[in-house]
Image 1 (cartoon, protein in one colour):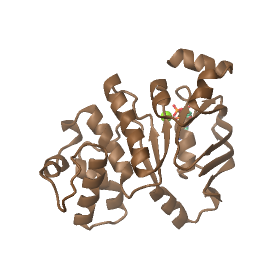
Image 2 (cartoon, helix red, strand yellow):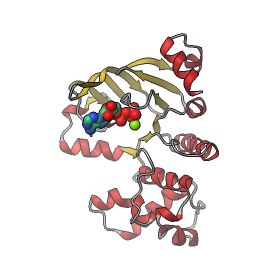
Image 3 (cartoon, protein in one colour):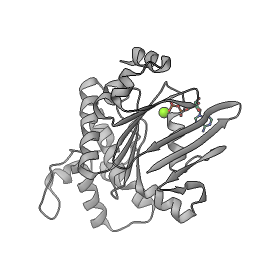
Image 4 (cartoon, protein in one colour):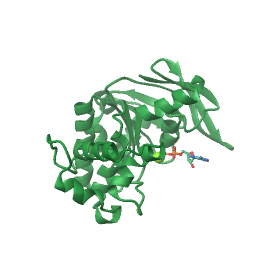
Length: 254
Ligand SMILES: Nc1ncnc2c1ncn2[C@@H]1O[C@H](COP(=O)(O)OP(=O)(O)O)[C@@H](O)[C@H]1O
Ligand SMILES: [Mg+2]
């Protein structure tokens, strides 16, 4: 469980987060919505300790992230898979290298285990057939050496998701996973997010301004506006809300 208490963050004169309170329950798919530039990505970065708030704090499973030791912070980052905004793949690296880059950077050099893990996560995101047999499939041999430029936008996005699944995290954070994709591909990615949440019992936090995604995948939703959470509730409550900020947001984005 992730709880955010009165989190404030300014960059220079600009107050981006102005007292955020939120809780994300284990196993749910939680969507964070709000206008471009309202602080959604900044909020997520505080949860994994990539940014430190000016005030307030984040608790993961009842422990304040600010009090984490270096090792605990490192362990937390391993429990969280992060699908960055944009596909964010390295163009000069292969699919295999892109997927295992963080394990590689942490010193993992066991090629067999890296390849096994890469094949597992690429199967989980539907880029490879699921194989019950030991060893590597011929589809894997072909896919692993491809470069991002050989792949469609939807496939690149799936590789980005596969990278986040390495090491079986408890949480996956998706930052604008469908932005820039066509409607059909967007729907496939939404479907994938929902399937992964169910199959792996993960807690998913999805930043989006795509209301179609929200209505399809969210268990609960928070709407950020002017640095605070102006709505938190389920999809039904979101639809029925009379709050003017919610109503305006839905009119503009649905
Ligand atoms: N590292 C940073 N330094 C200065 N300003 C930043 C930084 N990161 C984000 N911002 C500013 O904070 C605001 C919120 O950004 P962001 O969270 O990325 O918005 P979004 O809701 O679109 O994800 C923006 O005005 C952005 O320019
Ligand atoms: Mg963002």
